[in-house]
Image 1 (cartoon, rainbow, N blue to C red):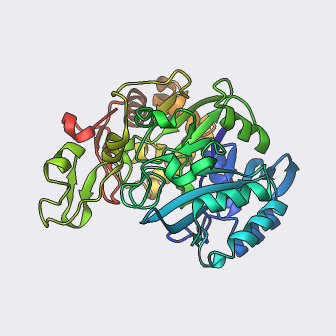
Image 2 (image 1 turned 90 degrees about the vertical axis):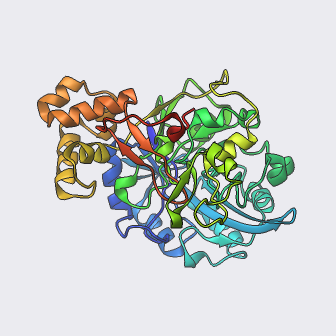
Length: 407
C-alpha cells in the first residue's frame, strides 16, 4: 500500500480548484496511491464535502471510488516561546468525524478556521498537543516538513534547536516526523535526536498532478489504527520504504536570495557570513545548512533501524524532459495517461516496468529517461529561497560537487 499523508484541498491558499475528492481519487489511482489523507478538515466547507463524499468503512478508514482516505489537517501555529516568534506546521490525524468535530471546536478558539484550509492558530504547539491527547488518545500528530526555513519545527528562521524546547515532556508522545521535499532520510540520520522517530515523506500536494511526489510504501493495506501502530513502532517489516524527491529539487535545499538570483552552498554562505553577495541582506538559510548546523554524525551514517528509501522523479517531469517541453503541456499529459493505462499506474512504471517493455510502448528517449532516474544519473541545480531546483536528465555536463551537496 502506497500512502500520501499530507495534501491540501481547494480551500487552502495557492491550491488548485481541482483539489476535490473525485479528482484526488482519480489521480491517486493513476499514480498507484492506495491511501490519501484528506487534509484541511478544520475548514467548514471542506468538512461538509468530506462528510458528503466519503463512505465510512470502519477502523478510521473512509473510502471514495476504491481509494482509502484518513482524516487529517495541517495547522500553522504562530506563537512566541523562549523570547522568539515560532511558526510551526503540524499534521493532526483523527480516527472519525466525531473526533474531528471536537478538535475543530477546540482549535476554533485560537483562529478563524474558515479563512484557510491550513488555519493560522495563536497557540503553543505544546499546549495544543496536550489538549488533543485529552480529546482522544487515538489522535496523533506529525510535525510537517521539519527543516523548511519559515514554518517548521527546526526551521532556521522560526524553529527550535531541540525537541525538548518545543515539546518538553510530550516529546515521547508523538512518534513520526515528516522530512519534507528539501531533505531525505539520509540527511535526517545525521542527527541522533531523531533516531526514535519514524521518518515519513509526503507530497504536500496543492494540485492533483502533484500527488505522490513523496510517499510511504507499506507491505499491506492498513487501517487508521494499524498505520498509527506501524509508525509508532517503526515497524520495518510493514513499513518497507519511502519514495523521495531528490532533495536538491526542493525549494529550500540550498541557501540563497531569490530577489538577487543568488544560490549558495552552506560552505559558500558561511564564507559570506550568511549575507547575499549582491545586496548584503541576510540569506534564507536552507535545509542542508540547517542540518549541518545541528547534526552530530558524519556523512553516510545509517541507524540500525532505519527505514530505507528510494529517489524518483515524477513521471510527468520525466516525459517532459524527454520530449523537451513543459510538464503541463497536452502532449505530456496525454502520454502520461496512456502509459498509466498500459502499465497500471505511475509508480509501477517508475519502479518496476522493464525498460525494454517501456521502449516497446513509448518513445525510446522516455524509456531511457526512466532508466537514468532509477540509477540516479541526473543533474540538479539545487533549489533555494522558495525556488524549486532544476532537474536535467539528458544534460551532458555533470555538476560540481559543491552544486549538489549530496548525502
